[in-house]
Length: 307
Image (cartoon, rainbow, N blue to C red; front, side, top):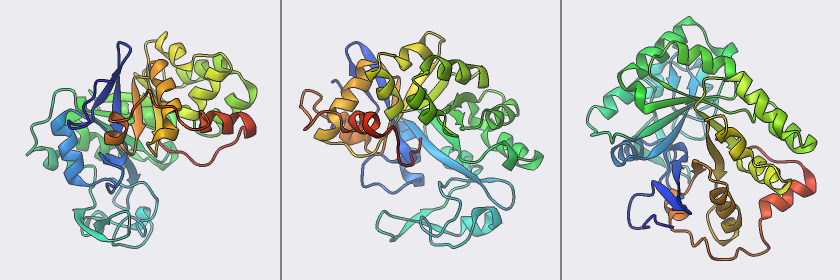
């Protein structure tokens, strides 16, 4: 493992393959709050892969927040769909203990101004994960999206679990990179239950033929692996990059899963703790083996997950 824990946690080199570490919700460390302008700007300056979420607000632009309401993550109240841009810009983010921060809620169009003072590294990539679907879009929302990303389109990659939304938004934004998450709407569960991983791959490729990266739940990758199917290689053979999501807690128990993901040569791992993962001792034996894989094999069920 070549990533030095004292340097920026950008990637892991393992067995001749480089795997990027994606800063989930803009987090560099496990105790970081989500979506702060300071961390997002830092990551873009350092050359990180970063992810933020997008939800449509009342003025048909996009708030950089995960939930559909602002009550938990910000100093405001209400459903984002009913809140105008001016109200959202007046809110502050909260930390992981609910304390207000000196960090504003960002809108997608604010990123151009934020990055105007940042010397963006050539390989920096900001994933815009649209948390809604095509039905939520209208011409005004699409126009705002296109205008907001146009100045730095090559540093953005759009992702969504709805292929129609991916097509609609990226078609309006020349130069933006294209991603797709085929695990939504029960697709990952169905593949695990049926073992039809070939079919899962074929449907994903057909749904979003222009996607350069697919986002796969780690539990799906590892469940397929235990049944003798290399899901990562299957997408690689079609010239797709693979992001495995999400490593939330990093420690000895996560070693078997992380090591296996690296052995399978995933191109990116989404994690809430890039610093912890970069410093992880991959030769340490986690107690009891892979908890994730054993749980999937026993129940075939899961809790909510997020890229």
